Image (cartoon, rainbow, N blue to C red; front, side, top):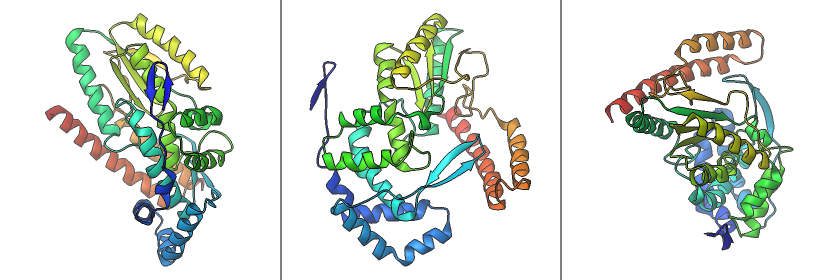
Length: 332
């Protein structure tokens, strides 16, 4: 254990041995098979599953694993992003590292207001907090304020040295650190969007900021979903002060806020995770426009037919989910 700022921070040991346990390898194999959309890739993996799983076991046990090459592609909705994808074997190892090293070492230190990419959290939890804070602040004041922040190019801007320093404070196991650092160093800059380890490392990277906002700035109403976060307050002046302090804090993490960052009054149409203060989907009118753009990208050959159809199905499911969440919030 380390003594940091007057508090005891537990460092986790004996983590690496869990990633090559056969039962854990099999569990991650089934998870990857279930989550992989490409039936061709799944079929090819299943045909040689025994060999692949044996190789994973041997490489991890003997500390011979080398991170494989990434497939890099671009998505255009909801905005242009560079996505990385790995082969099936590397996906299984990536899940093992996340579940058997990062989860037990990092999740205990995360605040419940950090709602992305972990069990029991997600968009629904964020909307529950939004609904709760709206009711609490409305009961105290007719008018209150919300600072909405968005980190610029978050995944690509994550600094390797800073991230590794943070990880050393949580993980004592040298073997576990080495394989996690190998994954980090497999990206030329930042960490790639698309892998399970990247999602966990990203929510952890801003954990110090979460504690700073809650414990130093004393913000009672706070929610963060990856690089998007909101602060509630009855004082606009105090939120302006908080914005200044957050910018200073993020500068030490080598991050900046983008131009979408601003302070809203409670009667303005704020959009957080695609919803307004009442949990209603705020972008219904833009769905048709987005689908027109997808059709344009299809005609230009930038996306395939399957990609276009998947987007259409995704938007339809999103609208149905929004209706369900809105109803559940109203009657909860």
